[in-house]
Image 1 (cartoon, one colour):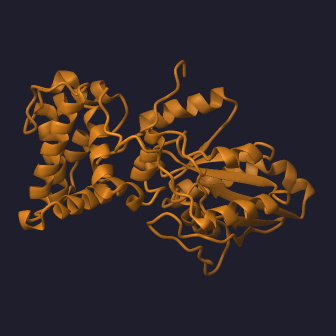
Image 2 (tube, rainbow, N blue to C red; image 1 turned 90 degrees about the vertical axis):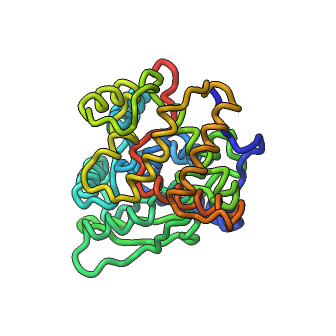
Image 3 (cartoon, rainbow, N blue to C red; image 1 turned 45 degrees about the vertical axis):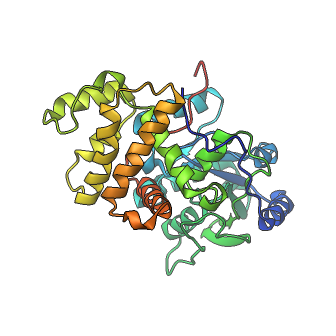
Length: 348
């Protein structure tokens, strides 16, 4: 299957603060009662840090899949079954939902029940790769468990905002302290595709790969999920019931690009962006197994998106970087649908 991987060079982003952060995490690790390993629900395997995993496995730990609101609900169900078969029971959470965070608090207390009866003070560490929402989740847990004005962990839309370990009290009787740690990647990401998945979800800075290449990779991911038998259907079809059947059969995992486009409350620009992508995708007659055909489709989509975003031709090639930036913002904001990019291992 043709998939744009932005060249063959592996993605590498390991700034100096990550080296220090890994060392600090290891030093504090012996005092920790529970580790919450935060991952991105859209890439449940790719967002794991194998180096962290080596010593996390020696402690009581829980995998927490954050950003579940951006992931396909059907695929979340399938991944839950996969992890349970591996002897793990992950917690899925949306750090921006009070109800979701409250459910997580209940779950954590249940898993700490034995320690709560024995210890006067407990230490919980939040760890994971950059930009999976560790600090957002820390703030949400604090607000859900402690009365009064919340103490804020520093958050931001770019990876690498948290650079030091910070402590927050989130419970009393016993006292429970939460350590928010900096996001840490491994020095050498194992594959090009894993690196690109990390980048489109925001765990690696866009500048490491380039916004244009990332946007094209995102379009490739969307295109290979195109239903083959829907090629002749027109994007302006009014039979929404038929579209729903077609898309659910084709994708098999929850909300899709086309279904989201049909939802009420969609802004005119959001609708235009989705139409620019899907109209070309559905009507494309080329073989997407062929790299040249995939490139042709992506070029056409980028050109159409340039018109949709009203980026003038006078901007030259830099205009496509602007298009890419806007497209990535749309995707990361959940405006292009809900997806899980990792593939379930064979036999799962």
